[in-house]
Image 1 (cartoon, rainbow, N blue to C red):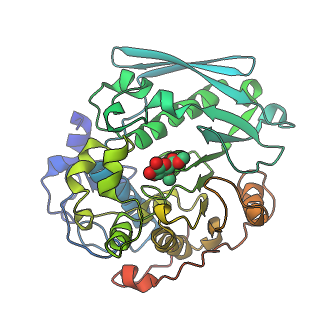
Image 2 (cartoon, helix red, strand yellow; image 1 turned 180 degrees about the horizontal axis):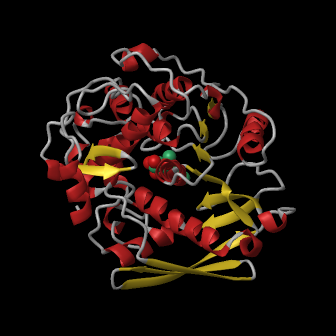
Image 3 (cartoon, rainbow, N blue to C red; image 1 turned 30 degrees about the vertical axis):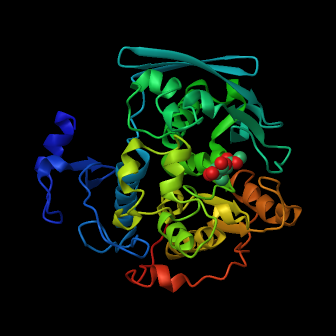
Length: 401
Ligand code: MCU
């Protein structure tokens, strides 16, 4: 912790938390435990978004913003690894359709280039654009530009041993705790820094009108980018399954029932998507004081359209429960339709079903193109009992987003 944060923590009231002051951080107007300071729990159900780790209730919109800071840190501590602060310096230049970013962290430097297809008709104010994590497999309205994010170059996803490879790790060190999906969120943040620095007249893009998408492993990434990078207006994770829209706990429960479903204990043996810190929790996911409905709660109240499939491996029951739990958070914020959950099966992995076109378009229209309302979307036919998983939550407050 920086000396300034330490001083702030010392000066702030700590009564709500039974933690030593050096384990508290002042952030976004809140005093929250630091990453590393959260205790293990023993919770079969999904952790309650309406209760702080200290046990205090989340009663106001300001409380919820603070709980979001906690949820972010919990996921970092147990699953994702640490999200570093912005770099020490970043210099962006534009040449044709290519944006170059010279980035410095400590004594490490890296220059990367990003390809931008400018939106049509944006004028000097710029237009909306979709950041595609490794590519997009959804229909995109013509007026929306494209930004290609080469996520594998930022943090590799070949196998568990590829942790530490990529320009994120060149800047932060090979042993940095971030798993690939969180590293991608940091790298996308640098693309947005570049867009902001250059301005719409040069890039053609309005940085306040950004969406992110990706499918499957890159859908996990799109969800993480949206959850940890607040400058994204619309988040569209597609068929992210385990580690994305699915809940670790519910996937374990489905596995115990004999389903062919991806679990935490399998996923860390397959790839480097999550932090090495996660490994000690993959056989006891009920001790983590968070789960993946927190991802939706972190995107809230911004636009979120979660696309899933009925493929067993992705966990249709798990994604349906976790994302309905997420929608209940949006509901409490008075913006239920800002989040849609679309599980339409009967098609191959990452092929977009045309039956979903109109619902997806309603999200582009509302959050990027400024017209109309998002449709009220919950299309899953999975047979689930939400109360089994969130029945122990405190009564949701009514908060204005
Ligand atoms: C759903 O995303 C992954 C899945 O987590 C992996 O287990 C599997 O190997 O690959 C999926 C994927 O990325 O497919 C393209």
